Image (cartoon, rainbow, N blue to C red; front, side):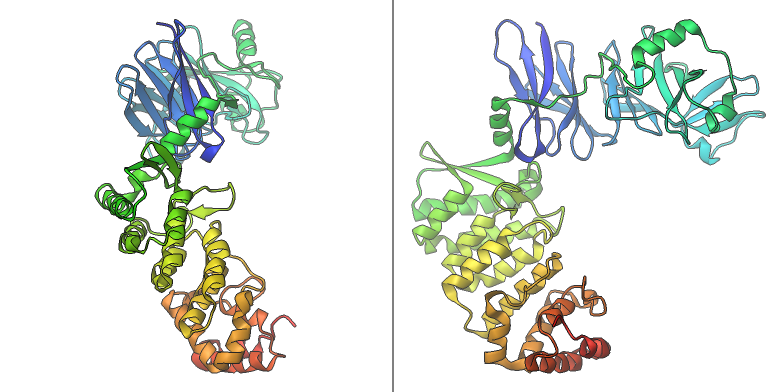
Length: 520
């Protein structure tokens, strides 16, 4: 049966689906090869499978058409280009410095070439291992140079397959960064011949010193011109298939299903919701959090008696109905979630990222717990400590202000939490009136005084293990203490008292603290 494949991109999370078109009027099927990052290449392997390359970290994957599953997967250079041999037996992978040959049947790398060895008789061969770095001995009279491939993702096809199975690889000039010749590579024999492009560029770098001005073959030169469109505009090998920016509504649905974890429950009673939350926590403990993250997102959809409820709506219902019975299970879910990742940028999974507001995983569960139980600030502290401070905004810019609006700031514990949030925000890189949010400085002045407030700030800094990062001397771009002193100038009596109190608590910073005048 005739099959063709192409790659269709979804708007969500930079994910692609491979669309497999089958003949006979049958509907296309879809395959999402990679958890995160777009698919770069896809090829049908006869009637049995589809091979894809891509992903943010660089992977090769093979999809078995009969079984409908991904059967093989391995890592690859994420910046490399690739093409499939005409007999579908080999995969050729290359970047600026290496040419690799892979077996398609086993997804194993057979050979890596990164050096060109020249003999005294003018012959050349490719070599694996970093011979150019003098890590291996050469025969008498041989010399070695680093392989330098013209590698350009914007249309220049740096390597294609010739009709006789040999590879044609464009080399380029170290100094001019323009094509300077063609390597004609015999993969089986690991030999190569170099043909300069006469008149195309000035060969003043290693390529000229290595080969001189050998005569080129006019017939081959013409063939190469046709294959590479020699000067500016270069054609693409029919076996390479670079992907286009194709959109497909069905792909959006497929990708959404791929990313989302589906949870079933019979109804939205407190008993069913509690059992559901316990099941979610148990699944994370058994399978590991990473197994539930797709495209760096942790997303849940709840199937309730035949109706689909999205994650935000589900946890909003808990708040609206005051489901306090579910609080222990909700607390357990968030505790298990926090134990599943280290925290910080690149670690915290996202939810609804870059749509309405950059939001972390289980953010709406955190909202439900915090609003139903104001005593759950210990869990919230862990949540913000583990958030991606540079990108995630929901916890500190939306959820915490909502919590303060509902509960106010009346106790010392409230002030401590406000200080922890301010430190967390400045840790994430945001400056400017952070310490005046929710009238924190005003409350500190009127209710606590400089000495007590300095002690609270010091306690929170040490609790968050931020002491080594206090940057007082470069407060314009510094964090923690520097931003606090910026916002509470020394001309203010409270600001002066605060500096004296902090200097006593941080004697090694005393001179910098007391000399910091702040923004007047």
